[in-house]
Image 1 (cartoon, rainbow, N blue to C red):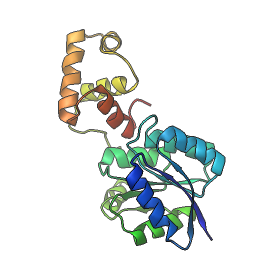
Image 2 (cartoon, rainbow, N blue to C red):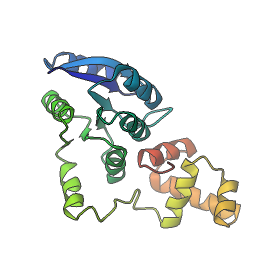
Image 3 (cartoon, one colour):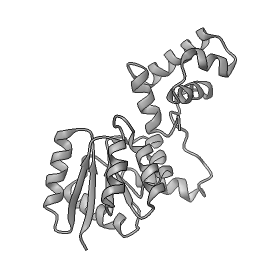
Length: 213
């Protein structure tokens, strides 16, 4: 059976290379390409691929939100994440959104081919470095929820979630019943701990981890 694949990645050179690799596989066919999550959702609806090969960190709509929208609209479409992000927050956010597999960029041709075939048949696939963490989670009965950004305090995580929802510092201050200065301090601490340059990058990281939904 030929697996029909929609390739989603915002880096043109990487996406083109991936399409070239997939073209060499005897049992796969690239039916479309997207460079952001919003386009991926639209093309998944229009093209009805077997598998969406999904990056996570993208403009317009991130890969986690795009995965959630695609799987909600058509559970028969398998989303296979292919990303550089290997943190627990990204892995579990993608799984909660409905992804059936999670590969890290750097996976070779054979690994990608096996993963495409597996997820198209309803199986679940993880890169070697990801699998032990997922197995540990489920062996514990799924009772321990992976906490996004464990270096943040609970209040800092709450502030980041509100930032990712699009609230201004003043709106966050009113929501949390604290001063604007307190919120600015929290936001500065969050940026430092996440090592991001500004609000837009922090929002992208937060949404990749499932915050701000």
